[in-house]
Amino acid sequence: MYSVQLGLLICILSGVQSFAVNRSTIEPDHNWKFQFPVKAQTAFVESTTGIPMVLNRFTISFWVDDVPSQYLAYFSTPGREIELYYDVRYNRLYFFVNGGYTYCAGCITTGNRKHILVTWSGTADANGVGSIWVNGLRVHTFSGISVGKSIPKGLRVKLGQLHNSDSSYPFRGEFMYFNLYLTYVKTAEEVAKLAKFGSTSDPEAVLPWGDFIGGGNGDVVLYPEYEIFTKSFTSIRCNANNMTVSLARAAFPHLIPSRASLKDPSCRVSWDDDFVNMTTALDDCGTSVAYNSSVATYTNYLVPDIVHPPADSSDSKGTAHAVINRGAVALDETRLYISCNYDLVPHRTIAAYAVASSRYSIEGSGIRDFKFEIKLYHDASYKQAYNDREYPLHADSTERIYAEGSLTSGGENRTEIRIEKCVMTPDADPNYSTQHELIIEGCAADDTVEYHDSPTFLAQRFSFQAFRFNERPTAVVYMHCYIDVCSADVEGTKCKIGWKACDEAEA
Ligand SMILES: *[C@@H]1O[C@H](CO)[C@@H](O)[C@H](O)[C@H]1NC(C)=O
Ligand SMILES: *[C@@H]1O[C@H](CO)[C@@H](O)[C@H](O)[C@H]1NC(C)=O
Ligand SMILES: *[C@@H]1O[C@H](CO)[C@@H](O)[C@H](O)[C@H]1NC(C)=O
Ligand SMILES: *[C@@H]1O[C@H](CO)[C@@H](O)[C@H](O)[C@H]1NC(C)=O
Ligand SMILES: *[C@@H]1O[C@H](CO)[C@@H](O)[C@H](O)[C@H]1NC(C)=O
Ligand SMILES: *[C@@H]1O[C@H](CO)[C@@H](O)[C@H](O)[C@H]1NC(C)=O
Image (cartoon, rainbow, N blue to C red; front, side, top):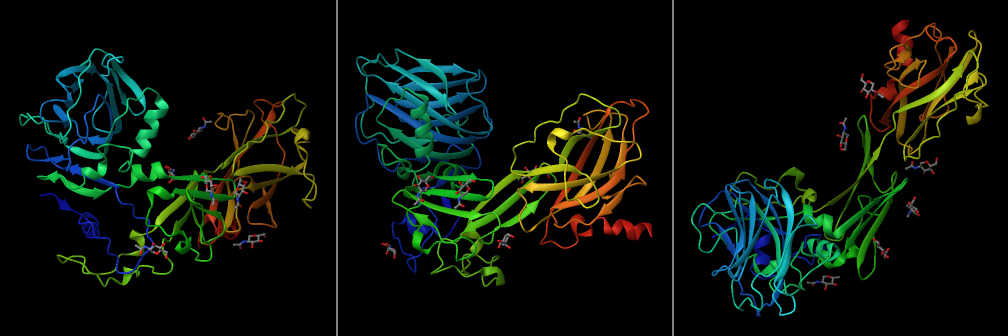
């Protein structure tokens, strides 16, 4: 017998929908995968029902994550009516239909997750044509295979084993979402649709995934599958100031939208017959933000049921190390996490000024969610910035240059910045060999640098005295600044420490 990894499954497998309360949950019904942990002749999955009709054409769509091995049996029926396996010696994928067969060489790689679709039509006019698709690409076409023949009704399909197997063929890895259809597909659009809707027990299938769930044998283990399912039935849009998530209701039949919320329970979801949608501003609904050097990650989560929330078992009423555990399901196990990554632009170059005249013009500013800009101002009042078309400035070598680095979009209330580094070069390349450092690790590296107070945490101001490079005295001087972006909610960040710590260090 196969074993089940999560206690909650048992009620579904035995067909009893018995939640203690009528609870809203995002758990779907058919997001199971079979894991074949070892190669064994006794390990296979067999459909619990036979193919319900005679097939003169068919399409099989499934996902696998296979472990490389000399042979890999994907599926078969007792008389090779349908069979697919891979033979690594010749790097061939063999496809049998009613004893006739075809193969393609080098058309799949093993050791990764992939979608495979095979399709065949033996109807009189179709001449036994068919094709094999891997990850949405047609890798093989054939014709003349078992022309005019049909697959008889009643055959059970085995996954991960050949029916006439010698022991070297068993499959190792994971098997997901096998659906057999009475159709013949021709286009990449149809294949993409089956790859997605096959990520369930497809009601359009004549032998759907649901008919395999109870059919595990030997060491085969049933696990919930989240990755393919989530990709197929949810979508997320990361906008400049909000994130929006849509769930296809058909795939989440136990979600009662009226009981769902985001982390902040006052942020509810909207829904229609087809979708459950939620939107949150990046600084609202309990959304949290974390930064690393290149990416800002905003995270929130869907709480499926605010009427009957599962107890938070962080105080661990459960006995995790005993044989069974009657502790509450943790909140963590029922949430649907939502996150959006936004690239930071922590580096910006401007053609700042030239002591002598030049013909350089400034680059246009990038269109990014996070926009870091450096601007130069006329004087210490910081009232008037130079216009883009005034760059590069003409400066005297004794003149003081007033600069401001700021996050002009994408920064939220809970964001702070610090200018980490500013380097000047006589070239647009920030790594140009001749360079002069103004600011390093947030502190002045040039004697003329002075810091000025800034009205917001999203900007930092400083000034310095203009200079020119002896190597290229007439060149435009480029200014390259890098920033740190920090969460204002976190204590002790580089941004919180800021430049004021530099003065103390010097004093
Ligand atoms: C659970 O409650 C929802 C809404 O109150 C209702 O639509 C649904 O039919 C109920 N389901 C069951 C299994 O009782
Ligand atoms: C989310 O952002 C998009 C694009 O910026 C905007 O069109 C939309 O109105 C925003 N939605 C909400 C609910 O704020
Ligand atoms: C939910 O989002 C989908 C797009 O993903 C849209 O077609 C649908 O109209 C939205 N429904 C509601 C109720 O907002
Ligand atoms: C920053 O986080 C993103 C998203 O989690 C990740 O892809 C990236 O590798 C991280 N970068 C660094 C430098 O840690
Ligand atoms: C963020 O700032 C805006 C404008 O200053 C303010 O209206 C809003 O309430 C602030 N949001 C939070 C979460 O503090
Ligand atoms: C400049 O050098 C740094 C490391 O010294 C490197 O990470 C960066 O990619 C270089 N930038 C360019 C534009 O070559």
